[in-house]
Image 1 (cartoon, helix red, strand yellow):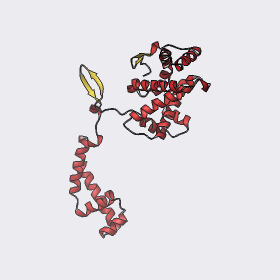
Image 2 (cartoon, one colour):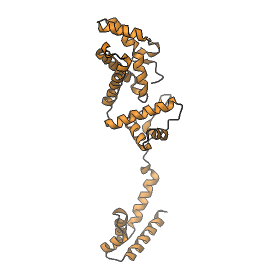
Image 3 (cartoon, one colour):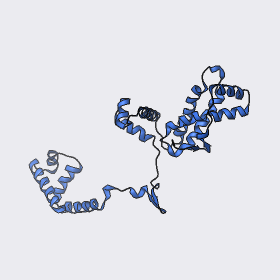
Length: 256
């Protein structure tokens, strides 16, 4: 977004700059019903919208939409501003522009994130921006230290406001042969090697005696102690220990 020049068909590099006097003159004129003055005032204050949009640089894909939402906030600020407020228009407009952008991001996100987490994420982005302005490395650890929170809280909040991506998004494209994100995903728990080991383990367990299988079931699947197993099976704890050790030894020989 930061490198994007044309947003919503507007060449942001060519946006005019208005002086404080010009802003006040145009505001008085548009409040009197001058439509041309209103148009000039809106265009002349789009730089204010652009400066605020840059805070949400993480939302690259929605640059046009975010800028448009900011412009809606700008127009609302113009409509509600009163010269009697005795404040600069920009001071009055900034909260309304930011509010409209945040509302768009909140309502446009298919994943509902609690307000507290969103607010935390925006504070994190602000801290990161401050660190970068001071030419400091804005690492997760540095941000957490600055905010006096745990690193996991920073990671969680930033992940919560990140845009979801499709597994069909291309990550590489050459000569029309696209490589999608899906092609890079794999389930390490279902590899050929692990599948073979599971088959061997199942066969090895099947060769154990019924009592040995019972002891392993109670010990490793139900989490019982050897003392509890001895009471249930009707043998001593020492016998349980010996049978368990023999069973594990047999399995290791089978799958090694």
